[in-house]
Image (cartoon, rainbow over all chains, first blue to last red; front, side, top):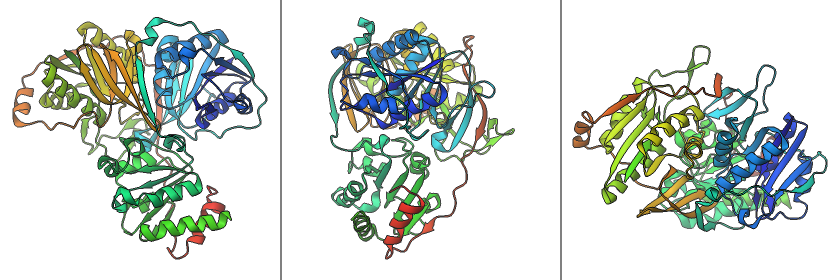
Length: 318
Length: 245
C-alpha cells in the first residue's frame, strides 16, 4: 500500500505544514510519494525525502504553476490512481481544503479534516479531529479503501531522518473545464511569516489603543521569528488586515507559543487559539478572562512590558 | 437571478460544549441554536444581490424538524422560500449529496453557503457540491460582485487575497466582510410565517465518516504569573520549561 502527500510551495520553498503531511504519511505507510506543482528551489526535494517520501512527482507545466484548485484536484486524483495510493495526506490550507474535497468526490475516498493525531488502525481506521473550533475532539471512523486526511498544524512533528527522494516529472491530463476560474491578481504580504504556518505568534488587541502602536508587537515578533495576529475588534476597525484576525470567525492557529497582548480573551478569540501548546498573556487587567486559558501571564501595562520583554529576549540571544 | 443559500443550524458561538450518553451525543441542554455565522454572511449577501438584480432566494438546510425555527429566521431575513432535507447532517459528503440534488433540480445561478460550519469546521461541503455538479467553487469569499453573468471575487488566502473572475453558475463559501449581517424586522418575521418551507426526503447515500466518540481537551493548569519587573524569569521559563524560544 502507498500514500500520496500533497506538498505546497511558498516562493519555491516547501511549506513546513506540508512536511508535516509527508511525515504523517510516512508514519502510516512505508511507501510515500509527494506531489509538487511549480518551480521548486534546489535542495527542497531533499527536505521532502528527509520527511519520509521516497519519490517526488513534480508537475512542471507552466499552466499549473499558479494554484488552480480544480486542475490540482484532477492531477492529484490521477496521481493517486497511477501510484495505487490508498491514502492522501495534506495540510489544511486555503488550497489544500478545496483540493481535498474535490479529490474525495473524484476518487470516492472518505475524507476527514482537522486531523490532530496519527490514526488508530487497531480496529478499522480511526482518526482524532478537532471540532467546535478547538473546544472538543471527535474520534471518527473512516470507511472504504481510500482515505484522505487534512491535517491541522502541529498534528505530527516533521521528520528529518528519512532517506532521499527520487524526483520524477509528472504531466497530468489537462481538462478545459478545470480552467474556468481566472485568477486576475494576488495580493500577498511578502517577507512575513504566514500566520497559519507560524510556530510562534504575537497578537495584539484593543488594549494597544491604535494601529500606530503596532511597532512593539512587530519588534517582539521579529525578535523571536513570530507571525503577527490580532483580535476581531482590531481587524474590524481596520487597524490590521483581516488575514491577521485570529478567532472563531478568523484564522485558527495552533502554534507552539501564542503571545496575547492587550486582548481580554473573549470566548470567540479563545476558540481560535485554544490549540496552541503554550499561551502567554500580557494584560494590565488581572481579571481578564484570557489569564484562565494561559500558561504564563504578566499583569502589567503592555506599553512597558512588551519592549522590556523584547529587550530581555535580545539580551539572552546575545 | 436564482440564488440558493445553504445554512447550518449550530450552537451559538458562546455555547459551552459538552457531551452526553458516554460522550457519543452533543449535549443540547441550555444551548441556543443559530444560523451558522458564516452562512449568515452568505444570506446577507444574497439579500443584497437580490435587491440589485431581482430574482429569488431559496434557503436550504439539511436537518431534522428541530431546525425549522432557524430556517424561519432565514426567511425573516429575506429568503423567499425554504427547503429542508429531512435528515441528520452526518458528514460533509452526505450533506453535499443532498445539496447537489436540490441544486440540480432547481437550476440556480448561484449557490452560497458559509466557508465552514462552526460545529465540525470541515469547510468541505462547498467544494464537494461544486465537484458533484461540475461547477467551480470558491472559498473563503470576502467580496462577491456580479455583473451580468460574470462574478468578481476576492478570496482570502494565507497572508493576503486572490482576485478572481468566473462565470455563473458556481458555488461560494462566504465569510466577512462580504456583507453586514441582517437583523430581521417585524415585517420580515410576520411574512416568514407564511413563506413556503418544503420538506423533502434525503437521498440514500451513506456517510463515509462516522463519529465514534467525542472527547474534551485536557483541563488547563493554573496560569504562572510573572512579575513585570522580572521578565528575565519569563524568558527563562519560555526557553527552558516550555522550550518554545
